[in-house]
Image 1 (cartoon, rainbow, N blue to C red):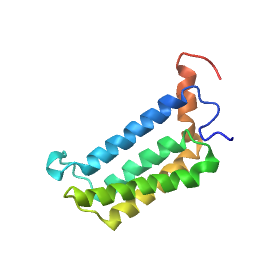
Image 2: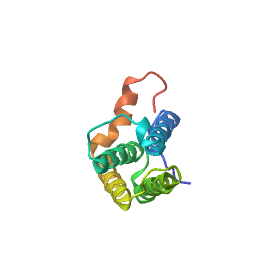
Image 3: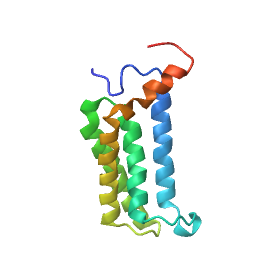
Image 4: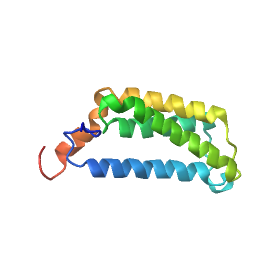
Length: 132
């Protein structure tokens, strides 16, 4: 079986766990009532785009490139699930938000495919532990 995570990573569970934590934070912030969120004067669609850039970049940096298509689908489906849940918790579910999530996912995966996507390898070279 071919690996899904980059084979050279020493701490793949750490990177996946931190990525899942990031996804959890995005979900929490997306599902909290608006009154409980800090008043950040940024366009709503930009917030969606930036959140999904971060999420897709994080996972795109630790997953093998051949799985980017599936990763992109999973991240956008995550955004779609949040939109459906928002309608159940009194928040507005919008197609525009899902479009912003998709744009952010695309940008994040494109960034992960550049040299910037090697951040986990660079960081691991500074961390103690076994060498790959």
